Image: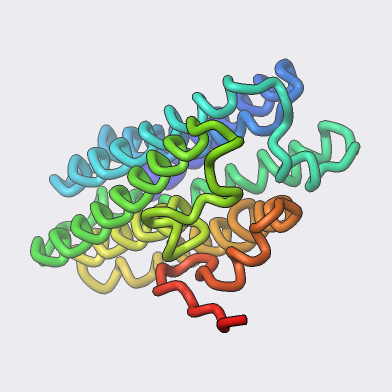
Length: 257
């Protein structure tokens, strides 16, 4: 297990260093968002190559299915404009790139390694209960569908003419949560954690991994940070009043005026 943990840490460190150099050359910190999904795939690949349990291939498929789709989706968004993502522009606010190295790249690199601990531990832990693996895989699938469908619905909305489309996207999954993609991410990683529980009690020791991922999605670089920008858009505060921020819920009924 120590070999897998250290090899995964080294892979993440090298990968994020390369990402930071690329971001500095491009002058855009948002490059780290592309690296986020693909970095997890790298860790899962290292675990698959160095681990010795069959479930490691299941986990590689799960992480790759999620991470490569996410990386491709974010890359398309990044290449569509030359501007910095508003979240990082607000976070950095004129500070030097060295601040981004510690505040963004180093932080996300450590988080990536920590969040992927269930994958690392499960790759060298004998699976006792395959039915638990199946439950985790089902949770992962729900999350992947939520994220994929949510992204597709938003992309379709953005293709509509601005003059005729609604001011705020609140169709499909977006009617029940303001961030179906972030909710889907959380489901994916809670599902991966449950897969690790198929190896017994040792999987419980990694519960902070999906907790940290959920924290990032909601509070750190995800929903809360994006909300600061979105609240300035016409119609969004009203949409926020009737729609759950993260967990999907029926929209609140608005009082009749």
